[in-house]
Image: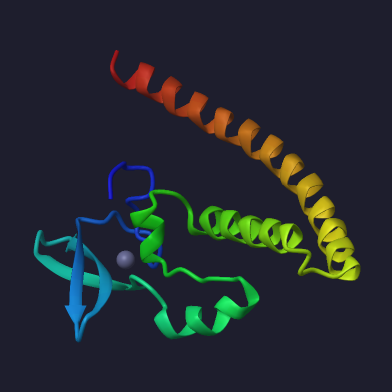
Length: 149
Ligand SMILES: [Zn+2]
């Protein structure tokens, strides 16, 4: 669990002070811990459940469809947004189904149409977000420059 980009709790949005890996009856569960300081300077700890290392039963059932699910803990384990990790897994599953000709023409066409619409929206969204992020970054740098003078 390296990197800092996703060290923000996926449950509550607070910075994560440490991750607890708890083993119960051979199953691994993850918790994000936060140290919260109130206005009087008193500290308390709060934990957020991030899910198991593996959804054993669910993934055994889903394996017949070639799909697997991951818990929020994987966002930290894989050091990338869970939505990106799950999408990559779905892409692999679709490619495998095509390679084995396990997908109907109807399903393939449905997925292609659905994804085409999504790709167009994603490109537009990314362009707009990039402009907004650059604008906010510019404001922050202007603020830093004036506050250090
Ligand atoms: Zn949290």
